[in-house]
Image (cartoon, rainbow, N blue to C red; front, side, top):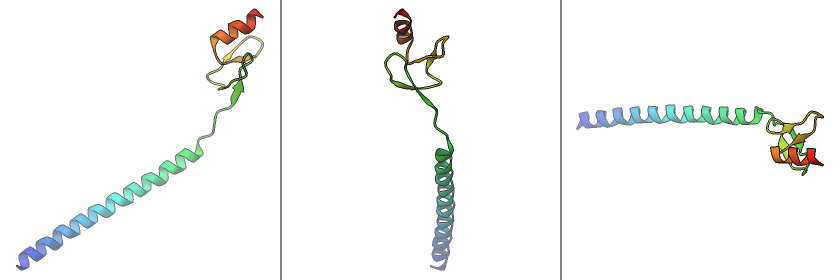
Length: 81
């Protein structure tokens, strides 16, 4: 009877320790993810010279005069007239 009680307490203690370690790890991960998502700066948006739609600067197409476009088609239409 005592052996069963000691075995039960040992299993309970091991389970409780594992639970605490996992919950601390998850808490740290959640805090780090929140910090990382807040520290990322946004990219500058620029309007298309043809239609006015805002696109990220890295995705826009630039012509020789510095005009920015949302697509190759709008660049060609703008150059035609």
